[in-house]
Amino acid sequence: MADNQPFQPFQLDRSRYPGLTRMADTLRAKHRFAADIVDRGAALFGAPWADEFEPVLNALFPTEEAVAAACKGYASFAMQSMRLQAAFERDRAYKAKTHEQASSEVYFNEEHMMQEYLPGLLLSHFLWPHHYRQLQFFDSAFVQAMRVAGARSFMEVGIGTGLYSGLLLRKLPGITGVGLDISPSSQRFTETQLGALGVADRYRTELRDVTAEPLEPKADWLVCVEVLEHLDDPVAFLRGLRRNMAPGAKAFITAALNAAHADHIYLYRNGDEVLAHLLEAGFTLEQSFIGSAYKPSAAGVPVPEAAAFVVF
Ligand SMILES: C[S@@+](CC[C@H](N)C(=O)[O-])C[C@H]1O[C@@H](n2cnc3c(N)ncnc32)[C@H](O)[C@@H]1O
Image (cartoon, rainbow, N blue to C red):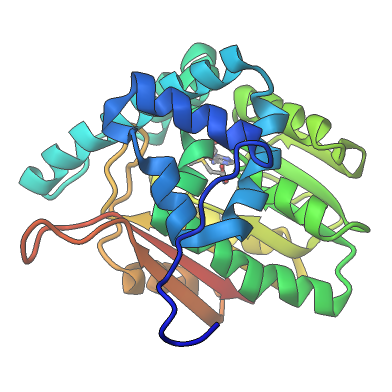
């Protein structure tokens, strides 16, 4: 394209992206605070974003009713985050809570998990720019390395929505995976998604705390996305991850920074604090990524960030 051509943002073609179109229409009609969030994602990230998002949406929310319920769940999830973030901006601390309290309020609360938390989190992986940029980093820094190395298997800890496991299974056709979580709802949501995407035969899940006895065989490639900030003692958890890794294994580990949520307990203020925990647990850094959710409203106001690390 010649340099003087005006930039044409990518626009969703309704017939090519029926799931995304349905979601955009629902958000516009019923959840005004998110009226243009799909169009913004499309304009910012283009066709690769839409091509990745569309099959996940169709797998999990194949009907108009399912899309409407997912949008409602996303709206509650996002509004709750916004309310808690406003309190965090004022107090500069997360509301005090233990992992045990978060577990009973959130991870073992089936209705909340299936109706709000998991659909909300899943949509946020694509709709929140820092979450999607983290996925792009995952693809370029980790999935590509797995492809080049001919990876045969992986382990994900804290599967939540199952999105990262699903992407690996789809992008690396020969690979098999195991997913661990403590929440039966996360297990069910993940299994539903992977079944609908046609990759469940290469994956199994286990309800398991990774700090307990290590699983055999150990992982050559390990993924753990947005779990550290949910814990009382992230270093003990990281040591548990290491015990589940084979010699020479690589891991993709992330944490949310300055991001208030009902189940965020450990406050990381910057990427260096996460890196210090990784080093303390015995990891070595290969590369890292930090992405911000939005511009701060004023100098010094904390903004949610995603911090991701490739370590060995
Ligand atoms: C924010 S979600 C993780 C996001 C998920 N990786 C995704 O991509 O959607 C947090 C998950 O960590 C799980 N979790 C919390 N504490 C855990 C622990 N000690 N061991 C394993 N999973 C845990 C929760 O049940 C929940 O499913």
